[in-house]
Amino acid sequence: MRISVIGCGYLGAVHAASMAHLGHEVVGIDVDEAKIASLSAGRAPFFEPGLPEVLQSASASGRLRFTTDFAAAAEADVHFVAVGTPQAADGDAADMRFVDAAFATLLEYAKPGDLIVGKSTVPVGTAARLAALVAERQPGATLAWNPEFLREGFAVDDTLHPDRIVVGVRSERAEKLLREVYTTPLAEGTPFVVTDFPTAELVKT
Image 1: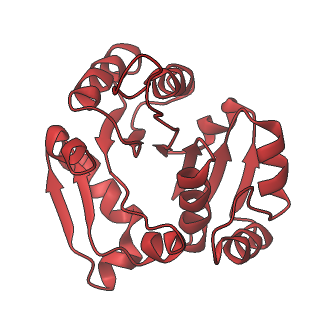
Image 2: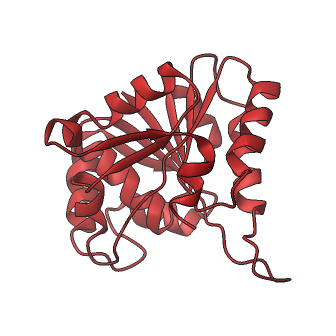
């Protein structure tokens, strides 16, 4: 499967490398040129055990590449949005500017039939709001929410061998595509929990 990962910080870099390790063709996209240069060279811009090895092997296989060019997302069929949601400067709420910007740009390249998957930790109601945006700008695309459960120091293993996979979906097609993405961990017996958007969002808050 052809996958794009939008945002190549801690979550995105681990997810991109792990998806390529599972056999998918992956492009990681980020606006930070230094970060992209480091990842393209097989070097993680942060310390995470096992990640450099997965980055290097996946890149050598030809299944993983990184770029600052958002147009590369047009080649993918499933798009994981993994940008950060830091605490807003004016309070406890999450700063959604990066998520909103990522979706706005991604929807310039999304195609009918594409699946857009949110992975960022967001307030309840965000997925529904973004689903409406997707329906408005690319009616043929679909949104799902797939929260991550990564432990620092074990992020690669937690992605390749998760103790559960939670997906918030509104269609059978979205569920089917995510089952295809996670074919290997599902074959290993990982529970696949299908739920709605609010529940998928609440799992991480």
